[in-house]
Image 1 (cartoon, rainbow, N blue to C red):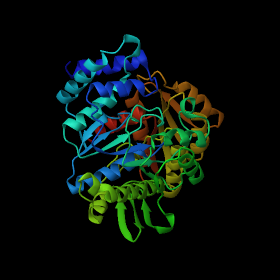
Image 2: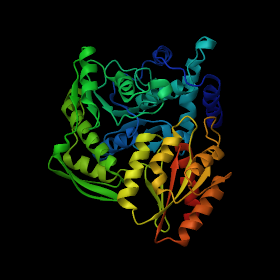
Image 3: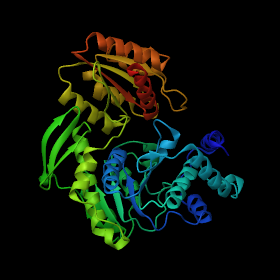
Length: 435
């Protein structure tokens, strides 16, 4: 297959099979490929929000050290190849086609009704690619949940990371934070080190480890050893365990993501000699955090008018966005562009963000069967007397919002938020306005 054919193959699997959970297919597929997931130092990352940010912080520290890294993430926001990265660089089209073709050949040997899903093929591609490219450390993000996620194929993982957990994908993971947390803790195995976001419920974690009779080192960042020095729209400064750090990411939650990442690096350092790897220095961590870039997460697209893109797509993320607006944009009129999915609690989104909504431009996310029709969101906003308009075209919505914000540039901010695929399009369109 060439690259275009490989894309069609993956998309066809998603259309025909959707998401089918369980580990038997992916384990059998990896066995046919020689179990490439074995023998590499892995950070396995689960959580509702912050997986990508935490992985980006850690990865940058390794890149600063010069250690070759592989990173697997989903969903892709800007480019299909974004899912597979080495040292922060996307896989090239020729390599993507080659590895997908090889995995597809193995997948096609399965009985027709039991062939791997699109996500399982993508996961196998990640492990095979990173193994053959001689990556020394890999970062593997769960796609959904943890226990039955296709990435959960390790016999043991040196470092598991549990990011912030909140209500999302309840139809698969459970209706309460407790149920969702237990599902995500399914990645933790005997002998692992677990590093978790500071507000994870300790009782749930400790009880899980005890009931499963696991020998696990459980690490939670100490908020008592954190001093927040400054928070601005373009980043934050803080001191953690006596060391000063700067991150170019906006929001208090990004500070908490950063100290989770710092603890994950500390955990790695304790294990590095056992795996024949170098320790990371304090300077590696400082420089890595200062250089991190994670697009689509409160990303500033324009200075004048002031425009941000934030892929807030569940309750916890909307609360974080509201907190950021409250802290940094109190003197601004806020214009939104919003596109959301119908399986999200969009009425809750409106409840959280409506105090800041001076005007909302609504779009229907394109090429997504889960998209919420913009007219339904218009009705919800109308019930709260929020001024809004539905647009059929992304660029028309952006143009109208941009021009409105530009007219009052000193007093207005434009925020694009909603599904990650929609955010990717907003970032692309914004580049056209800057060129």
